Length: 199
Image 1 (tube, rainbow, N blue to C red):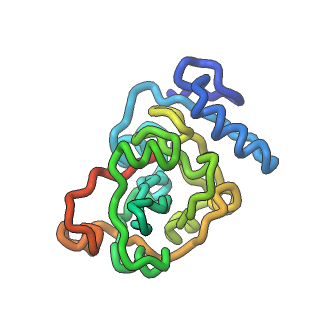
Image 2 (cartoon, helix red, strand yellow):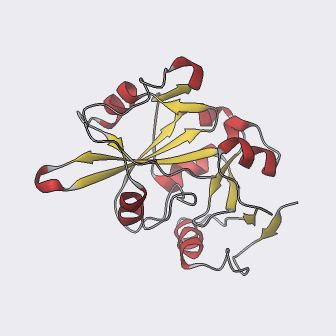
């Protein structure tokens, strides 16, 4: 059973990261109902089971980066339905980038301020381009990470889009559509670390 709290007060829920997410939503007039899962979940399927939701209702928050001159990296946060995988070609087109790769865990933390496993859809403290999987819009509500591992919240896709200032685009699809090779981000030779998974 999930513990429901209107505002964080348990150790995981009272973290500065969760407070940033709650306060970011509050500034736009939205009160989040943060819930703490009884045990850590490490993938969308486990999260869906924990919150009694369909797999597609879980928001995977994946951080990718686009290289800039001088070695700078521009973060792009992708809100992906739990049943889907990124389509590299469609993602590059939707983001308007020639070269994109998954952020390493260290890069995700540096660019968003959140650890992999708890990266939320908003609340980064800096301007970040956010793309939202159009399949999330099929649901009445979805579940997303709240800034710390095990902390989640339920929200309507419309409100999520508003809070994240996200662009809805077709950049993901069912995993069976993409071979493992096709899921590798294009144009970067070095192996990339795992993206940030939310929810």
